[in-house]
Image: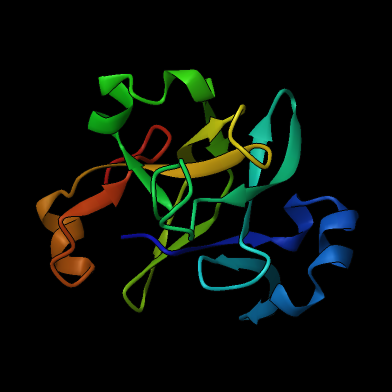
Length: 153
């Protein structure tokens, strides 16, 4: 599943760039910030309450009372088991996504879910759905794909 995103430096506040200097990359002359689940701090940019914020991405502690990993499925969200954490749908702005060694274009962003009342503060997860045939073939037979804003791959 999608374990990274890239966002043009021109689309983020300067404070983000200053906080994360090691994540700046050059792609054919354009500077971008990359966010990967394996990087520390594990954060994603999130459009939430009218502003762009850096939010903790997922849960890497199997003993924590949160879902383990960087993703939540649409089915998990519909079950309502996370209602006590006050899940809110948000947009994770991204120009590109990364899955199993392949970068793919994203037009508007990825749908995310912020658990605003999670222990330790807000945490964001990428929302996923079953992969389309195209995405499955592109991403090495990955069975789930991110839910994209107004886009289907």
